[in-house]
Image 1 (cartoon, rainbow, N blue to C red):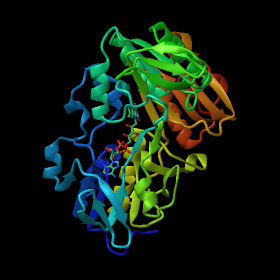
Image 2 (cartoon, rainbow, N blue to C red):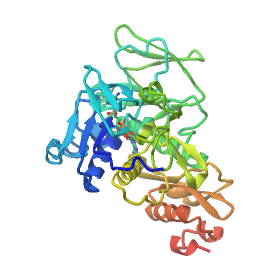
Image 3 (tube, protein in one colour):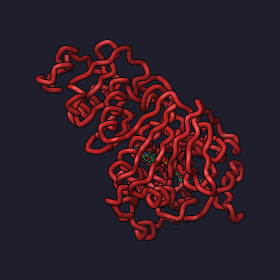
Image 4 (cartoon, rainbow, N blue to C red):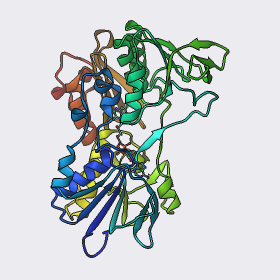
Length: 411
Ligand code: FAD
């Protein structure tokens, strides 16, 4: 389906995060000459979130390294960047959005890039000072200020963000405890081999894990001083980070009557159920042709891929081939890279020895690689990604033998 007979003159983007900022940049790069309005409720130019749990939190990178582009770029490229501005409603009939101060901004094409927000647990004491979450630069500033050496931090949730913050907290000299409802770390996304490895690595760095445990509430007078677990245990602490996943900011889309499920439903061109409206990044529930399913991906590569896709559609460029989803995580000296999704894999094969801190777990369907988790193993990640994209059959014996080059595993 095409947008309209004539190309859009006015593109409005809601959400000046990684995806929204990238749509604006890609549009200009693709030669879009019309008006671009980029509206974001945060007071900062679009920035990268990954460093907020890693280098930025550790104090080894500055704001200049975190922002996507300097403020002047938006002026020089004629992008009307409205910061500190929240979109309150979408009027699909009049084709305009209403800002929180009542101003209306008209569009020919609208891009929803509102991202996601940390899940609130709804537990008693969650509003105490010192019970924090991590999504924005402001959140990271509050966390960084509270991460005083010698203090105790309890992380609720052993997902990738919790694990990254744990690594940074240990480096900063905090006593670090992770409370996880599941029986293992990153259970939603990682293989058991990977979970076991991460737990051992973090354990060696002094992180304490409590599995199969649910937080029941937080206590303290004024600020948090303890986490109460459902089994009655009480963990004394100075600081809590709740890292229990995110929920998509899809309320604007729902209120406007767009089809939503786990986020805003889009097609392979990132188009919603309204042909003039697109949704990109963490807020979008998108098709994954490679896996014959729909999924809400939470990653920078996904935000960039969909940004490129929308810009191509709006400038009449041919669509690009769908990419293999991928993600990375840095913890201590570990470079963790994940490609593909193990949704339909029927077996796993480990290449290398986790005890050496360098290995990869391949998720297979027969002889075909469907996903790979690589630790300090860039060739396995890069080749794995190519193999997933091509659906190439591999020799499993050679794949499991590190003396064989990844190039030689292809059948
Ligand atoms: P966001 O970047 O969240 O941007 C959405 C923006 O929309 C926000 O600024 C929000 O305030 C704004 N907004 C929402 N509603 C409105 C409204 N009504 N009006 C105006 N503005 C609005 N990904 C990786 O691939 N690798 C990593 O290592 C990694 N590490 C991460 C570490 C942390 C701490 C976090 C939080 C995320 C990490 N991610 C990582 C995920 C990655 O950052 C996200 O997938 C990416 O930011 C998604 O971009 P987005 O633009 O969809 O959402």
